[in-house]
Amino acid sequence: MPARDAEATLRDAVDSVLAQTREDLELIVADDGSRTPVREVLADVSDRRVRIVTRSRGGGVSAARNDALRHARSALISQLDADDLWEPDYLEAIAPAFDDPAVGLAYSNATILGYPTGHEDYIRDPCVHPLDRFPELARVNPVPCPTATFRTRAVRAVGGYAGWLRSAEDWHLYMKLAAAGWRFAYVHRRLARYRWPEPGRGLSYDTRRLERWVAAAHLAIVLAHPGVPGTRRAAAERLRAVVRGVFTAAPPAAPE
Image 1 (cartoon, rainbow, N blue to C red):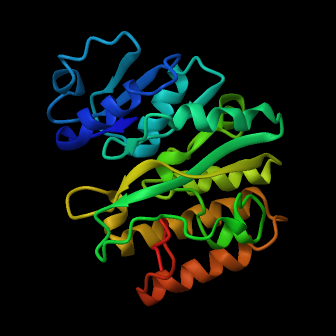
Image 2 (cartoon, rainbow, N blue to C red):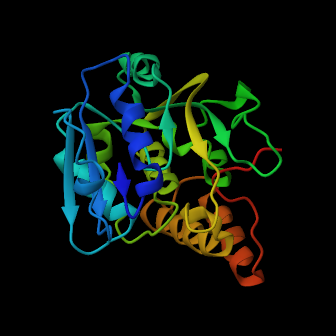
């Protein structure tokens, strides 16, 4: 769980993890240079399953996620931001997907909190999920961020999160896993709650900034995996959008 100046939501996010019906878990909170240290915000949390790793200078969400990844000891790892929440049975529902050794990533539907028009269902149509093949995966990010769980060795084998990316690092990782041959699994239940970005909270609120990072992520996939179908076209479309200053189809995919 990366956290930077997330005092308003951090405790709720942590509590949602500690309330899981599966108790065999470890929560690693990566403090990315918060002005009020995470250790102070969570000072009254005495649960031994919580570990805090700290960097004195903020390196961005990717660097914070990688800090946590380096300390992870479990065969499975999950990503949850400090402003999102899990339902109590998230882990219990998602873990069985990894009984299939081909699965490197499992995800679910989610409830959207604070969407401008009041829409709550992140994924309306489950028929295209799991979406783990190109070119479709290069066109749209199918995974609600707080619902993703990975096989740890799969993430480490592809190099973890791209530390240079300041946004879209999750989508970039999903594409790297798919390019490496890992399959995805999908559970069509709202197992997490995603807070819609707003000023001062949520990196994807600035859509023009996000589009630039999405374009960079796609270019990186093209360079690393030039033969993957659809990535060149997707990268070109993203670059044209950046030049036009138009936001086209950013993750998270906005509900219809």
